[in-house]
Length: 383
Image (tube, rainbow, N blue to C red; front, side, top):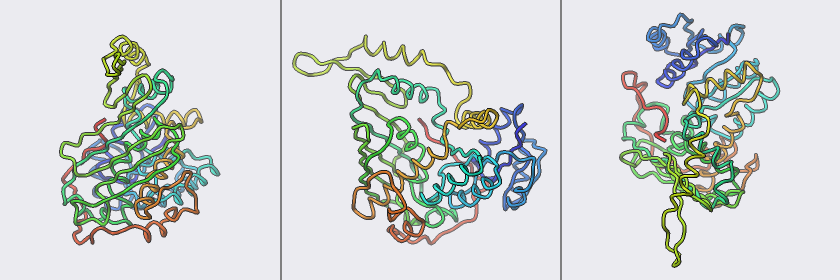
């Protein structure tokens, strides 16, 4: 049985705990670690866990009954915490985002490769049935050449959102809506569309005066397969409608699920091709259903990777790709130049120092609260 430690007792830890409990024959939560031990104890009580409560995660590094840690802590500490466990050969499932900078991502990958510890970055939306099937349909080649794709990561947050102590600063949070919110959809976008060749972007802060960071970003993308794309991230959209659109030679796909097929009339105008659409829908419906979804799906995949010594579906390299894209958005926006891929240590935003010195602070953060302990959060996107 795989021994698990939950690092961080915030709201996202609930999702991890519930998933591990659903897979309880294969794993056991043995520790919850949080600086606020009362929060960790309340979490253990809520889920009827007979586990240790630890304030300092360093106390776990020499234990031989912990094989896997779930890192559910603020983004700024993902690197230092993951590094400590990876160095000990302990497997790490790290909440998004992987780390604030490419420099830290590359260091995490180097350590994991050297010690043999498995590293997976949470991107739970891949483990949704329709999204998994969309990936299979795209990979089948039945749609022909991909022309254009657009991802709308549209959220709404009020001004009090950035009052939480670690939010709203480049140093502590690492970025605004592109980094924290759109990362869900950026991961899907890159997984579905493939490698990026170039990004040209702009970022803005339209409505959050207690944040140094952006609440709107627009990125134009050139993919290596020849397709072009548009990525929009926002905290300004009432209703939080989120969508991915992919226009191809033989059909258009959307997430949430929709397949559209048009054929041209004699004058070039479209009409629905119901037969071709039905053929694609039948193929889509015929793909195997996944057993576990969302966070539970990813945690089950990580347990399987440990049990069978295979790579998890979402590896550290996948996590790096997402951070590379976000870094390119910021570098392009604040330098006014397109960014070519792959990004390396030669890029000015590769390191924390370069990034913090290169960004613009839209506002000064003046309000700060320690915790929103009595208010929950909505986890993940609505795709």
